[in-house]
Each structure stands twice: as structure tokens, then as C-alpha cells.
Amino acid sequence: MCIEVDLDLPRPERKERRKVCDSTFLDHLVQNCDYGYYDAGVKRRGCRVIAGHYYVAVAGKTAIS
Image (tube, rainbow, N blue to C red; front, top):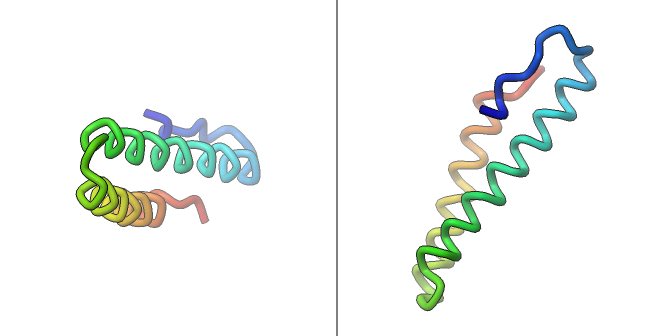
């Protein structure tokens, strides 16, 4: 939902909003890993690595140039 940025905004403001959206997305992914694997260190770390990959893929695909 956060990715739907108002196209009427100037590009610098849209880019800044997108950075906040992407950061929030990563925070939520990591938080889900922590909740899902609160007592499993290795699995939690693996989940966080995968979360990072998802973040990079989404941020790259939806970047404002």
C-alpha cells in the first residue's frame, strides 16, 4: 500500500517517501522473522537473510528513477 505514491508530488519528495516505505517494508519482514522464529536462532537468521533478499528485489523493482 505504501508504494502507491502520489504522482503529483515532486520527484525528490516521491523518492524520499519511497525510501521510508522500503525501510518500513524491511522492518516488517524482519519483525515477522523474529515473531515466527523467536526461539530458533539459525532459522531466524535464515529468515532475516531471505527478508533482505525480498527487500532488495522489491526496492529495486519499484524504485523511482
